[in-house]
View 1 (cartoon, one colour):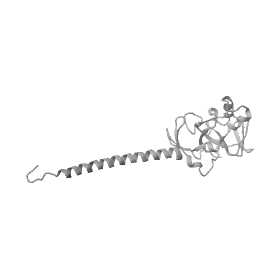
View 2 (cartoon, rainbow, N blue to C red):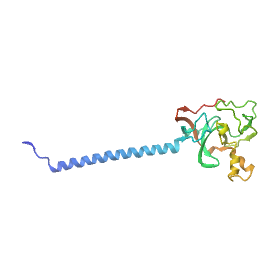
View 3 (cartoon, rainbow, N blue to C red):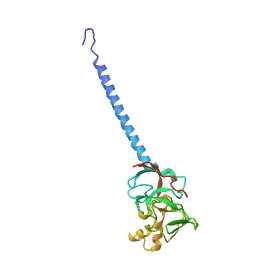
View 4 (cartoon, rainbow, N blue to C red):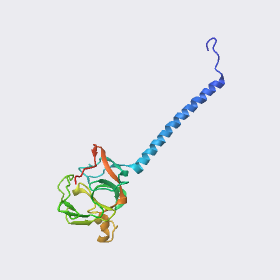
Length: 217
């Protein structure tokens, strides 16, 4: 201590040390609070607002590729119903713990006829223009006449030759013992409105692509 300098009172030093500790505690609490808020926002977003999904198979190729990551909006159908051509995420009718992704083809109350790789809605003479199909459709492409119940949708993958969808789910239901007869199994052609979780909006990995308005009907 230099000449003429006075020693700092012990109480003042103690006060400064306490203030420093309080400042550190406030900083730590501030970071903890921010962390909790971020976690809460992420949880609420994933639970109620968005769907973040990884595509495990090629049933929607080439619109959506295997291992693509995408974002879907849960709120897309809060005030509106799915439309034909929408790509939707939904609880798989044969096992609701699984989330599937397909394209909406048939709407509630419509008839859907599949003849020689073409789809006809409500007896129309003009088939749907399905420019999104990646190749000629030859598997399970004929002999279907479906009447979509109210509150239900008929969905299919874009990769028709490699998509387990509404065409074959009734057969799977009987194989798994979920339906005791062919008549009972017919309900598994369709996805109920309440099973639809949201609408696919865009892929962000491995490339970015908008998934809305991909059908020109």
